[in-house]
Image (cartoon, rainbow, N blue to C red):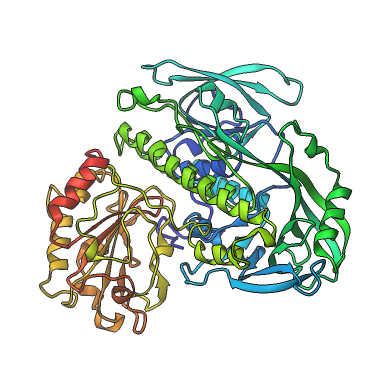
Length: 629
C-alpha cells in the first residue's frame, strides 16, 4: 500500500482523498448520471467499486431493498476472486474471516454394508498449485460489505441508493444521456412514487428475474434438469467426522449431499438431494419443508446422525441452466453500427446450479470486465467501440461455465452404482480444478487482446488469460513481493518490462526500449498520457531484472521506471524489481533471456506479449484501444 505522496496521513490509509464528483456528492439520487447500476449483488457492487475510482464519473447504484443484504445465498469464493479482491485491497481481511478449503472428502456406500456410508477418498483442492490465493467460504453479504467499503473510501464517496425499484427504460439515441430509467420508491412516505433518472449507460445486475434484461428484449434460454435440492445453513451436533471438511456424500438409496463448512468454525451448508422432479410438478417441490430436508439429510448420512439446532437460512431449488444470447442492448444486425447503452451482468445473463460455487465468482468477473471499460470510455481514454468487447468476451465464459456445471451437477446427482467408474466424481473434481478456480478463462484476439505471434517470449503468461503472479525482489527496499499483488483496480494498464541480460545502466535492449518509451513521440506513454497527469496516470510501468537485487544499482535504472508522482513530484520506488534466487521469475514463467514486454489489462488479463524490440507493435496495439491524450 502506497500513501503519504499527497502529504502526511495519520488516519486509515485506505480512505482516499475525496475528489471530483465526490467533493459535493448529493445524498438524493440526481436526475442525470453517467452510469446507473441496478442491483447491489456481486456483479453490481464490483462494478460500482471499480467506477468509484474515477473521480470525474457520476455513478449511482440502486437497490429495491431498504438496506444491505443480511443473509447471502452464495458463499464460495474461488481463488481467482481472491486475486480480484487483492486488486480492491481487501483480500487479506476476507481471507482471515473466511473458511479455507484445502481438501475435499468423498463418501460412498460401504461395500459390506451398503446402507452405511464410508469415506472412500480425499482430493487436494488445488493439486497443481495454480494460485498463491486460497479457495474460501464466506457469506456473500460480507463480500458485498467489503465492496461497499471500497466505494465509500474511493474518491467519489459512493454508496448504494436503497429503496428504489427499476420499472423500465427507454433509449433515445443521440441524446447526451440517452437512457431514461423509470424508478419507483419502495419505502417511506413516498413509496410507490415514480421518477426518471437519465443515464449515459445502464448496467442491469438485478438477478435471474432481471427487469433490465426484459426491457432490452433478452430472454434466458436453456433447460431445467428436473432435479431438486434442499439447501440449508445450519448449526448442528453430529457424529459425522468430516463435518468441518468439504464433502461429496453419495448414499446407496437416499440421494447425495454436498457439504460445505462455513466461516466461524460452527456453521455449515448442506445441499441435500431431493431427487427427480416430475415434468408436471409446477414448482410443488419448492414447498418441501425444512423438517423434510433434515430428515433426508439423516437418511443419506446413515449410520451418522445430524441433530440440527438452528438454521440461518434454507431454500429449495431446481437445477436450471440458462444463458442469454447477448449481454447488452445491441441486436446482432446492429453490432458495430451503434454503441451499447444498456448492459446486463451476473444472474441476469446466466443461471446454473449452486454446487460448483461459480455464480458469485463469474458474476464479479462480469462486473469487473465491464466497469473498467466504461471508466475508460467516459474519461475519454478509449473509443466507444471498446464497449462491444464486453458481451463478446463474457458470453463465451458463461457458456463454458454452463457446460461445466451441467457435467458436475449431473455427476453430483448420480447414484454411485450408476457411474461408469466408482471414482468418476473425485477424478472429475481433480481433473477440472483449474476451471472452478476461475483460471480457464482465455479471451480471444480483439482490440484489447493481441495475437500470439510472440508468445514464446513469455510462455508462462498466456495471452488472454489472467496474469499469473510470481515472487520477485523489490530493489529499493529488498523485500520479496508478489509482482501481481501491486495491480490495483484503478483503471490503469500494466506494462511489465522484463530485462535482457546486461545490468542496469549498461547498453541493452531494455535500455533502448526505456529510452523509446519515455522519449519517442510515437510511444504510448507520450501519446496517451494527459499532459496534466502523473507520468503513470495511464500506464503503470515496471521493470524486472534478471540479476538479484544487490546487483541492480537503482541509480542507474532508466528514469521511466522511477516516475515523479503526486503534487510534490516524489519518486515512486516500487516499480523496480529483481529476480529472487531460487525463485527466478524468468525461469518460472518461461520468459526469454533476451527480455520481453508483457501488457496486462486493468482487469488483470494478459493483453500482449512482445519482444523488447517490437516497439512499433506495442505502439500500434495501444493506438487501437486508447485515444490520443
